[in-house]
Amino acid sequence: MKTRQQISRREFVGAGVAATGAAAFGMTPAASSAVESSIPSFNAQMEYRRLGKTGLMVSAVGLGGHWKRVQAVVGGGPRYTVDSADFMKNRADVVDRCMAVGINHLDTVDGNEVQVYAKLLKGERRKGMYFGYGWPQKEPRVPQFQKAKALMKGLDENLQATGLEYIDWWRLTAYENGGEHTFHEAEEMVAALDQAKRQGKARFTGVTSHDHQWLKMMIEQYPAQMDVVLFPYTSDSKVLPQDSLLDTIRKYDVGVLGIKPFASNSLFKGDGSAGSPYAEEDAQLARMAVRYILLNPAITAPIPGLIGVAQVDNMAKAVRERRELDMKESAGLRQANQEMWARLPGNYQWLKKWEYV
Image 1 (cartoon, one colour):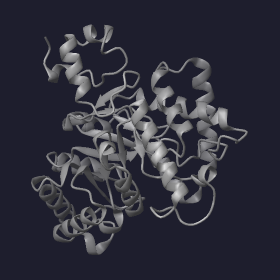
Image 2 (cartoon, helix red, strand yellow):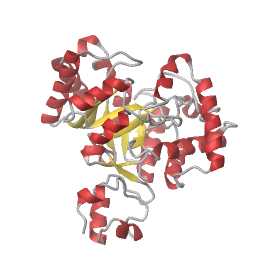
Image 3 (cartoon, one colour):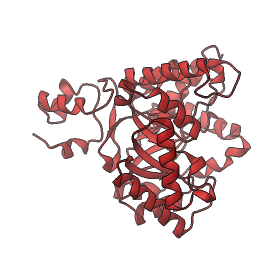
Image 4 (cartoon, helix red, strand yellow):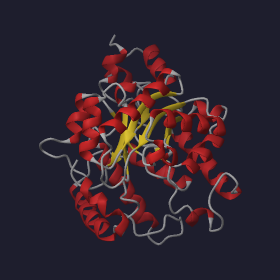
C-alpha cells in the first residue's frame, strides 16, 4: 500500500475515491476512508488538492473574502458588517452551501471580512472550513505595522476581538500595485510569522503580493515561512517560458491560492444577480475560467468571492466538468478575455502585469 506522501503526490482526491478511485490511488477502502475523514467538509463530488508543504487537502475552489456586488443579491443599504442582518444571512447561506458541496477553505483580506467570517465560523462550522487570515489595516502596508512586535500586537488584538483561537494560515498583505518592501521590513515580517507559528496562533504562514519578483525573493530567501502565497491568476494568465514564478513555487513546494480569477469581475457582463439577462452566459464563463486555471497544477485553487448559493453551486459544477476546454470553449474564452481586459477599470490596470506569471 502506498504511503500518504505518495498519495499526496497526485495532488488531489475527489470523486470516486471511495470506490474505483481507491484503486487508482493504490489505497484499501480503510485507507481511503482515513484520507476522506481527514478532509474537512469532504464531498466525493469535489476535487481536493494538496496545499503545498502544508499537507492540507483543500478543495479545488475556495471562498475568497471579498463580496463585491453582493448588493445585487442582498440589496442596497448600510455598509455590510456583522450588524447587517440580511447580509449576514447571505454570508451564512454561502458558507453553509460551500461546506455542503465540499468547499473547505476561505481567505480573508480585510478587517471587516475577518470579523464577519469569524462570527460565522463558530462551533461545527469552524471544523468544516480552513480559515485564511489577512488584516491589511494592521499589516506591513501600513508603516506603523512594519515591525515584528507591532505585527504580533495587531494579530493578538484581532484574535482576541474576533474570538479566533487560531488561524490556519496567516498571509501578510504586502504592498499593492508594485513597490517592494525593504530587506529589513521583510526580516521583520518573517520574524512575526515565525513567532505566530511557535505560539500556535497560525498553523501556517506566507504572504500575498502583486509583485512577481518580490514574491520570488521571499520564497527563495524564507522557504520555512512561505507555506502559502497568494497572487493574481486570471482566466488569461499564462506561464512564462523562462524564469517563471511558478518554477520557484514548484521547487519550494508552496501552496498557491489564486486571487482575481475573474479580473475583479471584469470577465462578466452582468451584475451577478439571478435576474441578470447575462446570468447564464456569465455562469458559463466563470466555469470555463476555473477549468482553465485548474489546468495549471501549480495553482492549488482559485478563490473567487461568491455572493450567493447559485454561484457556489456553479463553482462546484465547474470542478465536476471535464477539465480541458474544447475548441469552441477555448475560442469563446479567448474572446471573453479580450473583452475582460477592455472592461478592466482604471484602478485595476496593474492586473495586466499578471497576464504572464
